[in-house]
Image (cartoon, rainbow, N blue to C red; front, side, top):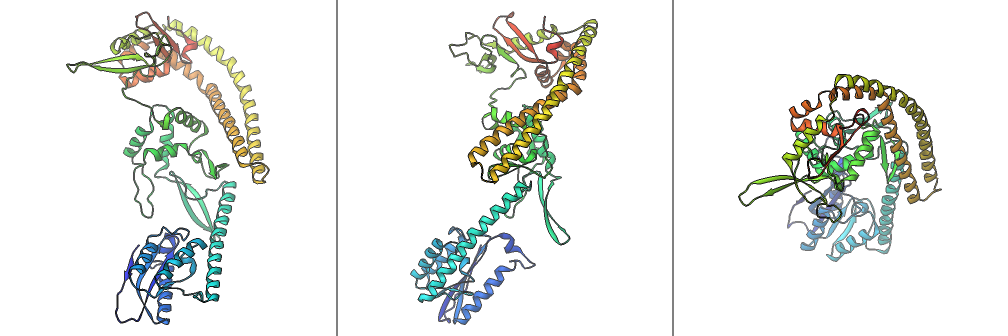
Length: 510
C-alpha cells in the first residue's frame, strides 16, 4: 500500500485523496493492474479537486481493507500527513470510504478538522453548514446501517448454506472451491484436491494406528510433499504441527459441515470414513495436544508392564562417571508407595525373557488342526449373534439420525436454547460414533475373522523363530499383535502374559 506524493508551490490550495476498496478481489478486477474501482475513485477525486481550484498533492490507496476498523495503514499515513503539512481538503469518493460506523466517522472527521482541513465527498454535498453536517451524519448512519445489514445478510446466507450441506467460506486442505456456470447461473461447488487429498487421507490413517505423534506426522507429510495452499500474499508452505492438529480435528473430512458451532451433514464427498475419524479423535483426546513424550524408544515399550501395579515399564538410561550408559526398564510408579517394585530390569534381560515367552505359545501341526476346528465352530455360532446385533444397530442408527434432524429443526425454529441444543447434539454424535465403531467391528468379525484365525494359527506354528529372526520394527508389530500385555517382575519366574484375540481363544502360554 503506497502513497504517491506530488509537491508544488504553484497551487494556492492543496488537497489529499483517499481511495479504498474492501477486498483484494476488487483491487484486481478487470484487465487493469489496479482493477476498476481504484482508478474510478482516483479520477473522481482529482476532478473534484480541480473544481475547487486545488491540486492533489498526495494520494493514499487502501487495497483490500475493510472500513470497519481504524487500523488501516494508509488511513493512518494520511492522518499523519495532514497533521505535519498544511492541507486544505481531504477528498474521498463517498463518506463510507472513510468509515463504516458513526463513531469512527466522528473520530476521523474531528482529526481532519483539527488540522484546519475540510472533508469533501465527490458524490455527497457535505459541508460545515448545518444542513451539510446533517447530511454528513445521515450518510454516516446509512453507511453503518449498510455495513451491519450486509453482515447480517451474509451470516444468514452462510447459515442457510450450511443447513443445506454447503460449505461456507474456503474449503479446508484436501478440497478446492470451484465455480461453474449453468445456464448463465453461477454455481459454487466443492471438489477434491487431487494434489493434497491423498496426503490428508494418509495422515488420518497413519495417525489412527497410534504409532505416530503429530510432530512426526507433520515432518513426514512435509517430506512427502504436502503443502498448504498459497494465498494472495502468502506462498505455499509446509503444514505446521498446530495446523495438522487442527486438520485432524475437523469433522469436515468425515462429511460434516460446522457453522457457528452447529454440525450439519455436508454435500461434499468425505475423505475419511466414520470409524477412522472416531479412532483419530479418541487418540487425540488421550494425548495432550496430540503428542506423546518419547524420551527413549524401544520396541518393547507399550508391551511390558509392572507385575505389581500393572503400570507401564518405561526406559531409563543411566550414565556412569566413565561415560558408560546402562539401559533399564523401570516401573512408571516406582517412586510411589503403591508399587513395591523398586528394582530396575536390565533391558537385555527383558528382551531375553520375552523371546523365551514366545516358545510357550507355539503349536504343532496336530494342535493346529484341532484348535482350528473348535475355534471355527465357535465363530459360526458367534456370527449368528453378530448378525442379530447388526440388525439392531441399523435400527438404532436410524433413530439417532431422526433425532438429530428433529433437534436441528427445533433449534432453527427457536424452540430450544443454543447451549441446550449443543449439549444434545454432542450426546447424539457420541451415540452415533459408538454405533459406527461397533458396526465396523462386527462386520470385520463376520468377514475377516476366519482368515485372521487361520493366519494366527499359521504364525503360532513357528512364532519363536519368526520373532528371534525379525528386526526391531517387526518385533514391535508382533508384540502388539499377539500380546495385550506382558507383566514382569524382577525374578525370572515373575512373568505373566495376556493375549489379544484371536490368540487368546486359540491358546494360552504354558
